Length: 306
Ligand SMILES: *[C@@H]1O[C@H](CO)[C@@H](O)[C@H](O)[C@H]1NC(C)=O
Ligand SMILES: *[C@@H]1O[C@H](CO)[C@@H](O)[C@H](O)[C@H]1NC(C)=O
Ligand SMILES: *[C@@H]1O[C@H](CO)[C@@H](O)[C@H](O)[C@H]1NC(C)=O
Ligand SMILES: *[C@@H]1O[C@H](CO)[C@@H](O)[C@H](O)[C@H]1NC(C)=O
Ligand SMILES: *[C@@H]1O[C@H](CO)[C@@H](O)[C@H](O)[C@H]1NC(C)=O
Ligand SMILES: *[C@@H]1O[C@H](CO)[C@@H](O)[C@H](O)[C@H]1NC(C)=O
Ligand SMILES: *[C@@H]1O[C@H](CO)[C@@H](O)[C@H](O)[C@H]1NC(C)=O
Ligand SMILES: *[C@@H]1O[C@H](CO)[C@@H](O)[C@H](O)[C@H]1NC(C)=O
Ligand SMILES: *[C@@H]1O[C@H](CO)[C@@H](O)[C@H](O)[C@H]1NC(C)=O
Image (cartoon, rainbow, N blue to C red; front, side, top):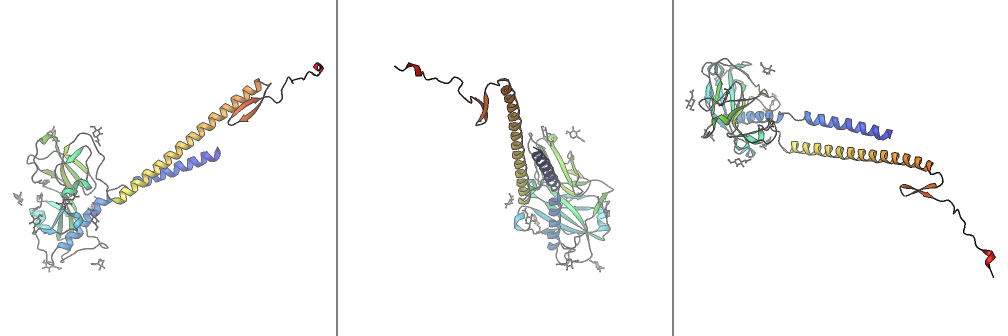
């Protein structure tokens, strides 16, 4: 009994640990990696002498078919005084970027049909692809400004003027009231807002954006975690929970049987004490009264022989 209890307690503790580890592994690092990946391919797509103010298309590996990425290099002074109007984003003047680089690179992305692979909003469905942008400091050199072992500097933006406007092409909005802008900001903030009167989204920082429509109740949370590694982790987690559940179930059943049997034996012993006349023996799992000897011996009537 004591051993079983101790075993059970340590097993529960172990499983709690497993559970905590599982939850800790769930973060949006994969999405940050995606931004880094786009930035890296974008830098590689730059010609040796990139022209400032010219939007360059970025070529991506074949597993990103349907995703569009582009990059533009701007002078910081020009960006601050005139803003930028490229891709699906209209950026007004007075966007302040730190740390200070004389030039900055803006990497634009459109996740296309992979949008719902990376992002998910509970109770809503995307009615436009997820588009986004991130800004990086640019050294005054040509070609790649960084590689994996020396990541480039991502800039922080502060808007002193109007909001940045995000356009969505070829979207027909039947019921405008049901439609919302969603913002997955790079700092991890998630927001929802009404669309502007021009059917655009007004945003205050870099990140990824889309529009969604309310759907009947369904599916789970936030930026999605995907990929075989995650799936595998969930399988292991599910398996651990299953095994734990089975063990706990078995333990409870064994305990119940033991308690039941002990009570039954106790009762029987009491009964046995009352019916003292008969001895008891174990037959299978229950006690049976037995007679040790036959009380009235059959007597042979010797006298009756003729
Ligand atoms: C960049 O890509 C877009 C969309 O795929 C295309 O319409 C445009 O012509 C491309 N621009 C260049 C310079 O290749
Ligand atoms: C495409 O492959 C790269 C590695 O080459 C990987 O990091 C990325 O997640 C893959 N993309 C998709 C959509 O599977
Ligand atoms: C996305 O669309 C492209 C064509 O535009 C297609 O080649 C690709 O397989 C699609 N990807 C997914 C995950 O549906
Ligand atoms: C931004 O550029 C588009 C064309 O690319 C143009 O139609 C639009 O008027 C421009 N917006 C502003 C505010 O300059
Ligand atoms: C950018 O913002 C992050 C958090 O929002 C902060 O940790 C970091 O120090 C900021 N960088 C600069 C250069 O201000
Ligand atoms: C920075 O770039 C400009 C033109 O792109 C060039 O004239 C200048 O010499 C460069 N400065 C340095 C320090 O490389
Ligand atoms: C990557 O960056 C490191 C450190 O700045 C540098 O030593 C290395 O040569 C770079 N590699 C490439 C392929 O540019
Ligand atoms: C958003 O739009 C809905 C319906 O169009 C309206 O009731 C609500 O007040 C709006 N919210 C804000 C913050 O403007
Ligand atoms: C989704 O909608 C259902 C019913 O309307 C609600 O109970 C649930 O809390 C919603 N889920 C989220 C994450 O808001």
